[in-house]
Amino acid sequence: MIGRLNHVAIAVPDLEAAADQYRNALGANVGAPQDEPDHGVTVVFIELPNTKIELLYPLGDNSPIAAFLEKNPSGGMHHVCYEVDDIIAARDHLKSTGARVLGNGEPKIGAHGKPVLFLHPKDFNGCLVELEQV
Image 1 (spheres, rainbow, N blue to C red):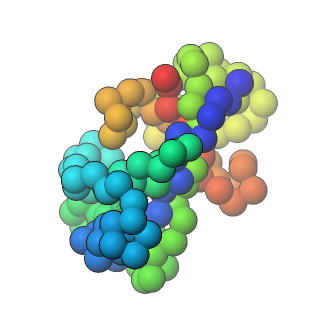
Image 2: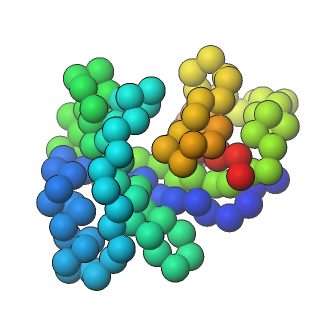
């Protein structure tokens, strides 16, 4: 059901410093910051030959990333995103296996302009999982 790894997301306390580190220390191709108000984050994507890294920074006080950074002030891995061909079929299959879909269970449009869903980390070995329809 899942396809390729789309990205690994890392919450960061300083978006500009983190982007500079990937750009200057690692020589990566770093995109521009992009606000995602529906998700309460500002994101920067780092393009790698085989996947992407998504840097996450809180957009507003109610951002889920603000809460994450309160618990993890240095930042850290937030989620992994896998591609799926049909997000509704994937959601329905996962729910039939007992997996919990976060929010109201309906896909939202993610940072790539495609439908996304998040799965409860307690159902996936402590890892928040994002699914993105391709």
